[in-house]
Structure formats: C-alpha cells, structure tokens
Amino acid sequence: MTRRRSLAGRLSRALAACVALALIVMVAASTLVMRSWMLGNMDSELHRLSQRAGEHLDVEDPPDDEVDADDDSDDDSDDGARTTPQSGGRAPRPGGPIVPGGPVVPGGPTGPGFGGSGISEGTLQYVSEDGQAAGAVVSNFSVTYLNEPALEILAHVPTDGAPHTVHLKELGTFRVTSQVVDDKTVLVGVQMDSVDDVVMMLVAVEVGLSLVVAIAAGFAGRAWVRRELRPLGVVRAAAADIARRDLADDAEELTRVGEEATSGPVEVADVAGALNSMIDAVEDGMERRARSEAKLRQFVADASHELRTPLASVQGYAQLARRDIDEASRTQALERISSEGARMVSLVEEMLTLARLDGDRALKRENVDVIPLILDALSDAHVVAPDHAWELGEAADVQVLGDEAALRQILTNLLANARVHTPAGTRVTVSLSRAPQGAEPVKGAPASSMLTLRVADDGPGIPAEIRDRVFDRFVRGDSSRTRDGRGSSGLGMSIVESLARAMGGSVRLVDSEKGTVIDVTLPAA
Image 1 (cartoon, rainbow, N blue to C red):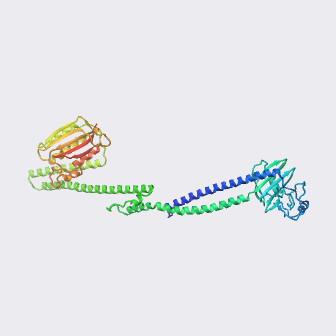
Image 2: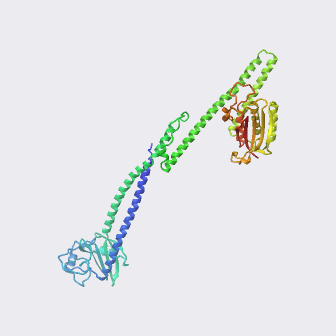
Image 3: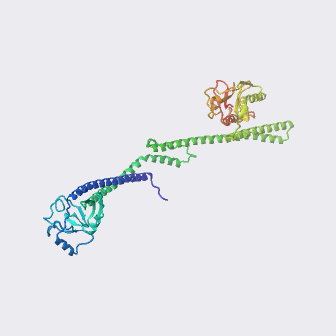
C-alpha cells in the first residue's frame, strides 16, 4: 500500500516551491536589469568612441618589412588575429596603404589612437575605404590586427550608427557601432566579455543564495505548518476515540474537541466546531434512540399484557363452556368470550391506527363542519353514560380543514377518556372557538387561521405524576393491570395526539384549578 504524504509535508514543499519561483523571477529580473544597465554604459562608451573615431582614424598600415615578413610567415592563420610585439620594428609609413597586420612600435603615431593614450583594453577599430579594410583591437595591452575572417564579419555590420553585437573568433564578443565618415566606413567596438563575466558571476551568486533561502524556507515552513496544524491532531484524536467506541452499548459521554482546537486558526476551529456539533447530534440521536427503544419495549410489554388478559379470559370461559354446566352459565360464558373478543379487536385496531400514523399515513384535507360531529359525539356519550352531564359550550360557526373520520375519532376518544376517568355526575363540556391570541402557529399557519377544540370536565383531574406523559402510549391514571373490561387501553390519548399532528395541528393539556382541560388546535378551512 502506497504511503500517503502528509498535509504538512505537501504545504511545506509548496511553500518552498513558491519561494524558489519568486527567487527565480527575482534573479532573472535583476540579471536583466544589470545587463541592461551595463549595456547602456557600454553603448554610451561606444557613442564617445564613435565620435572620436570620426575625427581621428587611428589604424595605420604596418611597416613594409613586417608586411613582407607576414607574407612569408607560416604563423598567419585564417581563423584568428595575430598579435605583434611592441619592439623590434620601425614606425609605419605615413600615407601608405591600409594593410592589416604589423605592430605599433615605439616612436610611432602619438595621437589619440592606438598609438597614443586614451584607448582602453578591449577597444576595437575598423576602417574601410575603396575596398581596402583594416582593423585592430587592444588585447592583453598590445595591438592585435584583425585577419580576413574578422574583417569580413565587421564589413557586414550595418552602418546605421546603432549598437550591434558581433562575435570574433579567438577575440571574443564585441559591442560595435558602424558609420560612414567622409566616404569611409568607420567601426568602433568594445569587448563584452567583462559584461558577460559580471552577469554570470551575479547569476551564480544569486542562484546559490536562492537555493539556500529556498531550503531554509522549506524547513521553516514545515515547522510553521506543523505548529499551525497541531490542533488537527486534537480533532483526529477525538474522532478516533469515537470510532473506537461501541455506540450501541457505550453509555459514557463522547469525547469533544478541546479549547486548543476550537480557538485555533479559523479553518481548524470550523472543523473542530463541526465535529463537536456532530458529537452533540450523535449523543442526541443515541438518547432519542434509547428512549424510542424503551418506549418500544414498554409498548410491546403493555400490548402483550393487554392481549394476554382478554385471551386468558377467553380461554377460561371457553373451558367453562365445554363443561357440563347449566344453560345460564354457558350463556354467560359465551357473552364474556364475546366481550373479551371485542376488547381485543378494539385494542388491535387502536394499535394498527397508531402504526399507520407512525408511518406518516396521509389523511384527507377537506372542509369539515365540526358542530354536527360534536353533537353526535355528545349524544353517543349520553347514551353510554347517562349519569354524566354532557354539554355543548361555545360553538364558532367555522369549518376545520382536515379528515372527518379522524375528527370523529378524536371526539370519541376524548369523551371516552372523560367518561372512564371521572365519577358519575361529572360535567363534560365541548366547545369550538378561534385560537386565542399568542397561540403557537402550526406548520407556519398564522394563529388567526387556527381553531381550538376544547374538552373540559370538572372531575378529579389527571394525577400530577403522569401529566407530562399523558399523551404517551399505554399511560393510564390507574397503573394497575387488573382492571375490568370497562377500563381503557391507555392508547386513546396517544391516538388523539397522532391524529391532530397528522392533520397539521397539535394537542396539549391545559393547566386548570379543577378537572381536566384538553385543547386540540386544528387548521381552519
């Protein structure tokens, strides 16, 4: 498996590369500036020499004996120039032809040319007239006359007075300028080897320093990047600790990222904050899962018990009916079997209703006139429990946007809850009104578009220990499991809450000094 490179290493190398690139640009720019400056000075010198050469043509013909000696010498080559000593000859003849070769001897021309003062090392002069050309260069503190190949190269330099660069074999590179003066082509030049040497030395020094600076920047950058990214190690450790845990069984609090990371650089602090938020969400999810599992286990236990009780009764009465008993006892046993069967059917239907609502079953959304439903529910309750006082309170002439069957079941369950858990003579009032000012909107609807369906009784009220859980499943005022068949299953209020939520409403238990008051808030049509 290929080992991945660390972020610190990549960042430090990128930093070193950026520094090196900046240094390369700086070296190139400084080199070009230095070379341009030196060439500018050299061009100024060329301009001075050009003016001087126009006034004094300093290249003279060599002595006759030296020319004759040159004709017979085997040392003259076609590839370069020849340097003659400063002694051992005579002065050149004035007015003689321009012939390349030959020395400038003591006692020769004393003007401001090669034979006089003011000519520096590396100065070149060339003169051409009527097809005759001669040229020389001061090299190694002596005058070297140019050979034919060098003269040929200089002859092709444009006579525009502008600086040009030429290379003469064995003599080096020259910066030259050529012009026509009195029908003569006069060219002067200055050797450029010193410029190239200075530029190369400058480049070498700058490249060496750049390498040192780039390497130092790489090491310093690596140390700095590691220090800045150290808080990421804290984040990694926290994430690794969570990964090692068994979240299904481990009830300990998860490790969070400390202050070192959350107060570090912005990017690291954002990562640390996001990890802490994720840990909070994980713990919240674990808590909700634990509560859900506990509720599920309680639901299964309660459902099993609720079904076991009628099943046991059915089994017992069935065995009794099979015995040799009188007809009246057999009829009573069959009635009890039928009653317990109906109780099981009702319980199963309620659990199926809750299961469908838990699965986000869509309910109808239509305009429903609630007043007739309330009157029907009160009438049915009066038939079942005539010993209670069933009344209709405030009745707003408005419609509800919801499901008619769900509304009937809400009214039936609320009235059944009031009937079962209150004594005879209890007054139960059902009212429908606009939601009060300040009521919390449901699903973004304004409070003015909500209605409140209230069921209030003046009975003993709900015990304080179960008020917070009154809408949970299998929660009853009487926690005993040995009630008769008239007792509730503990699912009625949970079904009311689920149906109200499915229609876009809510349900709550209102604090009251006496009895029980339950408000169901629903959207108005």
